[in-house]
Image: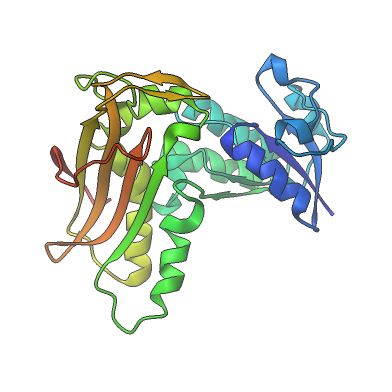
Amino acid sequence: MISTIVWGTGNVGRAAIRAVVAHPALTLSAVVVANPDKVGRDAGELAELDTHLGVAATDDVDAVLAARPGAVVYAASGEIRPDEALADINRAIRGGAVVVTPSLYALYDQRNAPPEVRDPVLKAIAEGGGSLFVSGIDPGWGNDVLPLMISGLGTTVDVIRCQEIFDYSTYDQPDSVRYLVGMGEPMSYDPPMTAPTVPTMVWGGQIRLMARALGAELDEIRETVDRRPLEKTVSTKSMGDFEAGTQGAVRFEVQGIVDGEPRIVVEHVTRIHPPARPTGRPHRTATAPTG
């Protein structure tokens, strides 16, 4: 059995606990949390299971890593704390653990990662013998490995489109939903997640990875963005009210352009409730280097 810790118990971490417990080759040895209110609570409770698991959540990272776990699921957010997330992950790698995480956008395609991100990871691997696998955003490996596998079923591939359609009304991540994505904010607000070049920073790695695997040469990477206001106020159980007239839906694409046409596309349609729908007509387009 591989001793496994889950670091973070948000939307990803809760699912990770359930997955570790269900896997016959893994044993949940620790759960790391940052919120003092979660310290001491049973992992089964935090993962919304019907049973206790006998593993109490802790914020003592030193003690957890000193036990040298075989694997670490790093599920803490890296969106607004990328430097801290990278430091945490490198600590686990130096301890010899196999680390899996969705938290480091720049490493989705590690060949194109900037040296200041990639080099410390390679140094930690050399020092401690651990390893790192980064994937798992919108959703999981559905933006890279899965499309490549499916492409092998066809004799001709004209376009690869990876599409997420997501309803935020039951989501529990107000900082990301409101301030990063802009839901519930005035239409004059510029959400960081859809600012020019940011979608390419996050999802461009998958575009490049798929292009390289398919032998396609990219002309450029383009972005399109379409934001729409709510027609009426929407109330959610986990994140409160989203007022009429504020942003209620966003659709954007990161497009890999091959021979002048979008051939490899990552598309996201997200809204605070199903009736809020972007039209598909972009309000903004931008281009980025292919890397």
